[in-house]
Image (cartoon, rainbow, N blue to C red; front, side):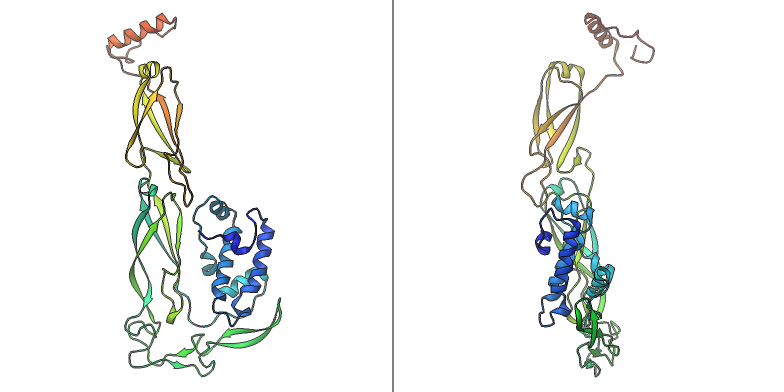
Length: 357
């Protein structure tokens, strides 16, 4: 799991202002326009922005601190690009939008697991539809036999430089080329399959390894497994949301499991033994001592769910209920009444319909 605190260079107990200030500083340092000769700048900026998105959201931060897999990704689709993020946070930015082929879209998919499957590593194949490279034109957008031509305005750069004033002072920024719309190339003969986009919607199957201990609603991020980007641009991410089905044997509370069993009055008085089901399909014998009271709870240590991406397991808590009979034959009713009288209790007179006659 990514260390978002390390990405921003802050402590785990950092305040919201400290997190925001760290992002401001790193955004200035890592933005691609401030590092035109560094091909890794955009990826580093995305890591910083993703860390800020998670740690600046109290709910996501709490889930992340609890050890859950919490991905970013929505930040870029919400603001539409790196410069729009700076526009949101700094009231300015480096000016101009990033030119060139667009990154592929992020894709969301869902998978269902039983509670028992969520307790062990699980492998699934996720099927979804997303943009993929057009096979007819190999993603160029041009009809086979006709190559794209270099844009004469930007000379293939996809952008033109503009001098602008920003919070960093006077800097050279870039703006998409109006003639080629930031592509750097012009398509004179469009591919008949993709109509010049270079992409078509395809069915995809992606294997996913699901770690043990996931909870209902956990979202996994598979970087670069989403929709294909334009003309060699990076693919988007695949977000897999996990649905964990309810199990009639257990109630899950965090990493702990709760199981309820009903015993009879005589079993509570004299003690008994019973088998408790475990999440792995086996069972464990539990001794109930004489005189057990209703709602007694027995804890079976480390018999619960694995802790997601951490060592150890939760516990299994067995709740004991004592079943009170509502339908007794005459001989059992008489015996129970005699027992009550011997203990100087005062049971009510027998009422019609309470016990069988």
